[in-house]
Image 1 (cartoon, rainbow, N blue to C red):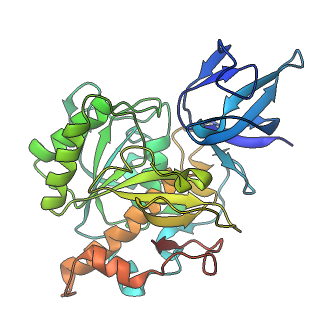
Image 2: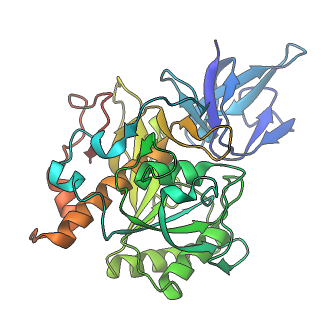
Length: 362
């Protein structure tokens, strides 16, 4: 059987369950691919995590991977290309948002997605109004997501309109999109993401209502820039949502960056049925039950794909907020769209946490 995992951050491969097993025999970088581990052992704790996953190589040796850099998929299903024979309409899938939001379809809302771009094969499924390649500093150029597919998958959940690939409809299919390609591989750097945010703040002619960051990255020398930028975005009423991690990670004192930054709303994914243990990080704003999402793929042979994790829980929350913002732009609501979202969704606790597609507030 094995344990299906994804590598969330670059980690070393060791010959035993602990950092003290030096030197490492290799390393592995983040990717969108599922890796099968043979088992898990408790070992030396590192940064509060003592779980070590292992694979058995062709020589019968155990190679160990630190659990703090790994996401585990305990749910049924698989990640990767699938055949989709019926329509999946995310606009109708969330069971705890009102119909008068759904009916807006996200009209007049601008969503910026900073990710791996958008597949040229799927682009006609979206109303894209601006693009920026922050890797090469090119405006309205090529942002084709032809390697990873992560950004295309995220965009499909938020707002695919089904004009080409008719079996996926996003939450806000009439939303307008600004697509920023900050990575080709799905491994993100702070410089590329930072250029994308700086361009949105200072050069983009259109102000986004929401920025979706279904990614994480290390911040070393430019942390002050991000905190200043997120503050400026909040002052111009642009909401930033970021992937906050999955399962055990969200019970740590510090989430991944930028989910743990001020003026950023962290969205987490938690498996169900669940046993809540420990205290949730105070930075988690929303929780979505861990599930296998289905969205758009990035190849000719595979127009649809399946995947899981807080990246896509964040996309789901971004889509729901887009509906709330659209409703607020056409109706007097007596508050902000975020307040509207808070009023409509339930608070998280173990009694109301189910496998249903829903967003819960903290």
